[in-house]
Image (cartoon, one colour):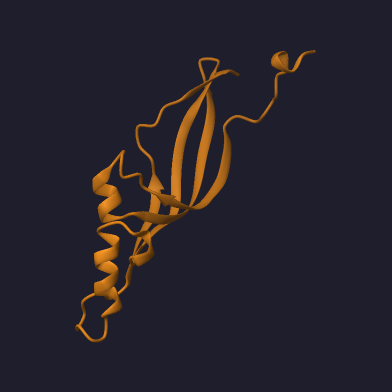
Length: 124
């Protein structure tokens, strides 16, 4: 039997989970607001989906995301681009300029359902 005709039997409903951990850099051409305000973030999440059979078609019953997104507010003088170069000069003065230029970190915790996400996968 060709691979395209194979039927894989899985218990329905079934949960699938996978993790994602990576550095995500926003593109200034696509979204200049995100690029200028955030630049890049570290994401570390687990996505869990439950697949069910409805009217002989596979579909998502639920989707959950748990984990976090971290944004480290620091600037690179070596990037050669503004605003990084100007902000790196201020950052270098931290301790002599009061609180200006202090590197800090923001963490957003994610834990919950992703509502209104519907996908169909074919026959079951």
